[in-house]
Amino acid sequence: MQYEFSRLLKYLCLVLLLFSAACIRNKGEGQVTQQIQSPSPDAILQTDKNPPVLHAEHWETPQPLPAPIDMEGDELAPFITLAGDELYFFYNTDLSLSEAKRVLDGISGIYYSRKVDRVWSEPEKVVLSEENALDSCVYTDGQTLWFCSKRDGNYKEEGDLYTASRVDGIWQNWQNAGEQLNIDYDVSEVHLSADQNTMIFSAFRYGGFALTDLWQTRRVGEGWSEPVNLGDVINSTEIEDYPFLSEDGLELWFTAFSRLGYPGFAIFRSTWQDGEWGEPQEIISNNVSEVSIDRAGNLYFAHFFFNEEEELLGSKIYVAYKIDDAD
Image (tube, rainbow, N blue to C red; front, side, top):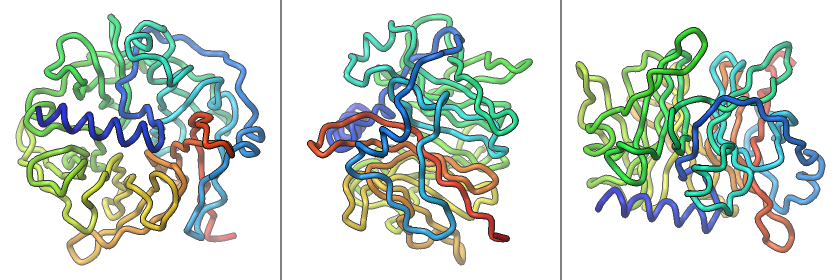
């Protein structure tokens, strides 16, 4: 019951305020290269009522990623590898489709693109099931893939956390992450430390501040330690979600409602100071979510855009490139 209430609250908030499909567990089926004509990034910029607002000086103005990443439907939930050469994201042709239709449409799910000579390849569907499933929320260190999935055999109807391993360049050996993470800890979106021994995750759990909070757990043998809430400096009485932990472990990025008065969600950064997380700084505002950062410091994130009539136009992956300090 606690898990169902958590998911319902989170889903309603995201749908009503951002129409975010990131919390819906999307499909992973055959691996097929997609070649879809996409709207022009210039057209997106011209019709977007509230484009992303950057509050820091160290990045260029955010821009949508061009084709082939920018496809005909909606892209969100990006994950960029530290090397910056692999990008995973969720793609859906129509967010208004029911979950049942997404399971069967053969398109919705996790996609993968590789950067070669500074050019992104055509996205390919990631194979993570031999049967119908809805997969999303990727994290990977290059060898192990963590993802969320709604499929037969889950502990929970709403979806479980899974892992897969990379063998000869193909993700396979997918398996449920287990009862401890899925039932006992109610784990949702995750990010792991560079050594893979610390997990930051979002969840609605007893001992939190209200809605979805950020928590931390550490590997203990074959399992994980009792989760510790990250505290009221990070968490509020609303939603904190989609964590990202920097490679050196000194920066925690996450999504929460704007604290500067901008519409919808914003992206925050907290730094580790004197043995604790510092006051978060709002870095990007205006209906943004799910930041992922490569080793060069480039920020990849989802942006939900609306026109002057307050109509949702969709979601796209944006990037704010880090400015070279030597320039």
